[in-house]
View 1: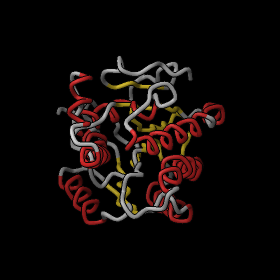
View 2: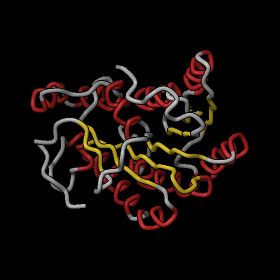
View 3: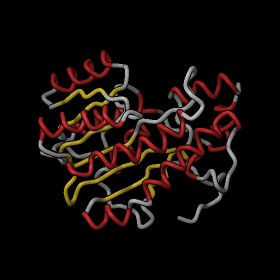
View 4: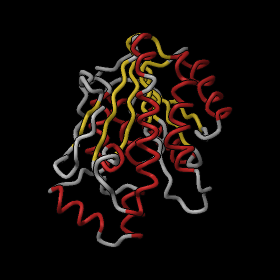
Length: 256
């Protein structure tokens, strides 16, 4: 997949992407770095992958910072942003990519803690670093974005509800963000082939992803969807603050 961003179009910009040691987050970081941004790679427990990604970016002449943090631990989040402030003095782009809730061995309320509470906590901690003209991008799925009007597969429902709760909580902050001149956009996509979520869903509900692919006609892969997330960093913000990626004909509209 080619980079949707022009070379050096983000020169001088500072970007942090949560959950970016692998998957969509990692590809998003690479697109931003290729466009000249200084990138902060956040990870929870995949430090080796984060370091490897940062090294690869530096080898290509980019600037990368590795910042570990458990996003459900506010002290850890605040320490992450202290590091960013010490290194860079501020942020221009915050991509809220990290999500979860289908992992085994987690507490019953983990999905809501990560997908709602942590998203608000991360943005709140980042606000002192974000000046007028900066942008916040929240990454979600159609299954979560449209959950109020279109049911999803039972195995994903708890995650979808928690991610929609996170989106709603972030949208409640829009007036204060707008007052500060901070732009906000939600990027929503269908199930993404090759992600951990898709793999787990297919394991719990064999054939689910193939069925969704047949209904949609096409499912984006990780690189393709990451390109849409990266493009959302620079493209004009839609009037409803929502960038819908791929087919949405199977989903009933939600009034924002």
